[in-house]
Length: 65
Image (tube, rainbow, N blue to C red; front, side, top):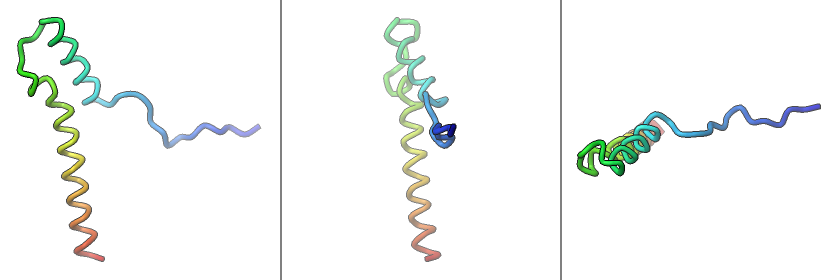
């Protein structure tokens, strides 16, 4: 029998996703008194990092191709 599981799929949350969930729960339970900017900063950091990587890849592709 063949095993049809894909080894390339990743499931679950990454480090920044887990941090965001933890910070939101702590904020909503009034354990921390941080600004929402700090609470959501792991997600913001992830998005900014992704966008920077895409921009750099576009620049490198245009320069070398």
